[in-house]
Amino acid sequence: NFEVSAPNEVWLSDSTELSYGVNGEYKVRLSGVLDLYGRRLLSYNLSDTETSSAEIQVFQRSFVAAGDVHPRIHTDRGSAYTSGAFNNFLNQFEVERSMSRPG
Image (cartoon, rainbow, N blue to C red; front, top):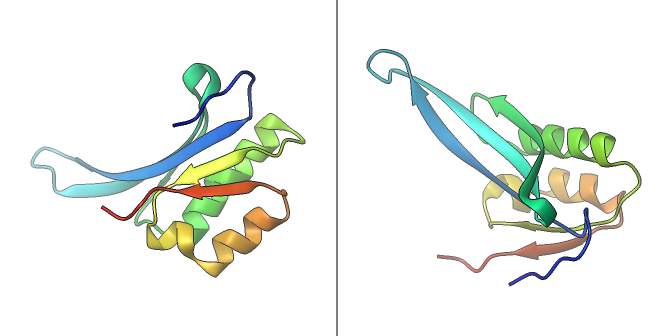
C-alpha cells in the first residue's frame, strides 16, 4: 500500500517472460520500471533471461530519465533483485528498498 503525491516517490519494477514466433518458440524477458505517480513507464529492457545486469540496465535508464531523485523502490524477491550487484548499484542513489513478501 503506497500513497504518492508527486513523481518519483515510489518506483515499481518487475519482469516477465514473453513468448513469440509462429508457435511461441522464442522467448524474451521484459523488465520495466514504473513511476507509481501517474503510472508512467520510466524505462524498459529486453533480455534473454532475468539477470541482475539486465535489472541494473533498466534502472540506469530510469535514473538517467528522472535525474537526481531518491525514490522508494519496490520489487519482488527474485534473484535479480536480491543480488549483491543489484543492491550495490542502488546504494549509490540513496534509495529506500521495499520488497513484497514471499508468495
